[in-house]
Amino acid sequence: MSSQRLLLISSSQVYGHEYLGHCLPEIVSFLRPDKPDILFIPYAKKDHDAYAATICAGFKRAGLRVKSIHRTDDPVRAVQQAQAIYTGGGNTFLLLTTLYTLKLLDPIRERVRQGIPYMGASAGSNIAGLTIQTTNDMPIIYPPSFEALGLVPFTINPHYIDPLPEELQAGETRAERIHEFHEWNNNPVVGLRNSGMLLIENDSILIKGEAGVSLFRKAQPPQEFVPGDRLDFLLK
Amino acid sequence: MSSQRLLLISSSQVYGHEYLGHCLPEIVSFLRPDKPDILFIPYAKKDHDAYAATICAGFKRAGLRVKSIHRTDDPVRAVQQAQAIYTGGGNTFLLLTTLYTLKLLDPIRERVRQGIPYMGASAGSNIAGLTIQTTNDMPIIYPPSFEALGLVPFTINPHYIDPLPEELQAGETRAERIHEFHEWNNNPVVGLRNSGMLLIENDSILIKGEAGVSLFRKAQPPQEFVPGDRLDFLLK
Image (cartoon, rainbow over all chains, first blue to last red; front, side):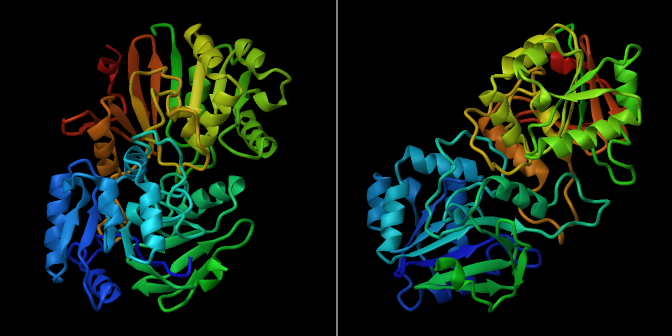
């Protein structure tokens, strides 16, 4: 996977920032110097027109041009010709199911492996992993499989949060849920806190953003990493 | 469904109470006067022995006898002969998948419709609904379907929580997630706060416990109900 370039963003909305505000500088830096047109994948939400309008407006602030895939005649060809891809957040089950229905998983995989930059936020980051099995979303649609793009050899938990004060905690903590995942599955899980991002280039994974990462591996205690740390060992 | 008796508990663990402490009096009241032996369904967790030991000890405090289904030779027959059922919490996808694998959904449905008391906590309450599509759990196992027991004509969101203070909220609020569900599905959703329970007998649904319920219906604003209120209209 050495020619891949991915920017996996935990959340498009971070407390204290306007929508996309915390990650737009990183996106601009990731796309430089050529600022290619971005193909937007809005399938994690139902109202594609409204979603595309929001994203176009957000990206325009940074001088980036966006075309939404739902406005193209042939989504597969749109991916094959894309110069950059941004997949937005929403519901991960809905997103994955739509990608299966439109037969877009293989074309996206191929295009990213050819070297075009892939960006995702929340559900859009989640599907870059091996499966969607560490999503926080409700299973509102039954997908044909939980297998996702597998661009990285782990699964992602977006919006990772540490345990809340006990009186606010309702149900299992996020770490407990990931532990349950590891009772049945072997893949490492990257818990990406809300303002965190992973920049993946060549054989390196660099933690960007304002918050660190909790890395969960089966039968091991979680490990903490901070922005600036690398997780390259996950790609070996 | 007029002969059904169900006690659907949001959580076995509530802040300020010992394990099962907030619901044991309600369970005893629900089972009186005969205190039948309870068939425990531990499939929402991996370690059935440990889980059964915990539940047996908890219920013993209230003078209740429990036998775990995983200790029986024939789970289907155990359900057919059960005098009462308690399904524990854990991971809803794991629980439902195991019920499908062991072909237990129909036997449980039939037995409950014959009138034996059914109790569930968290995942065990969730599967009493039409589907598991408003679970909070991670999809750690791929089930053959999201359809559940359908003992009640709605879906349940256990551990329902109101939006957190903005600086603690990571990702969508629970209400936003249920709104996404209703963009694709029509069933009412009962958001059962952590210390809440539903007592369903004949044609009535009574809210028990210490916390109220948020009721979500498609394209309608959520409605709030408090302990002592009835939701009988959901059964019409």
